Length: 128
Image 1 (tube, helix red, strand yellow):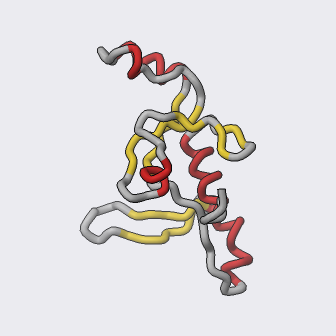
Image 2: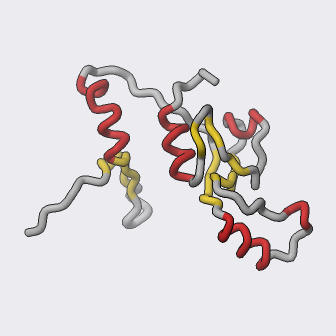
């Protein structure tokens, strides 16, 4: 038997989608475990979009592979590219558009989709 490290806690399993489950990352669990143990409600930020990590190399490759106009080119920067927006969510109502790139949230620099997701998750809903 091998021992390992906990990387997440299972939060949901989709019965009709074999092998698909959803987990809370262990770093997020560490952030909220004391509040949970005290019975406090856990609230977190949610934008309502899918994000993809954008790097200069990734953007360059996609721009070369694409026959799109120069206006549709992906900027060659680090950040979180808005890939898909869900209707009637904060992202949709707030004016973000598909292919926008998030490079800052508050005073924090965003270099990847995981950076953005972590900062959004830590945000208090209803506060800007």
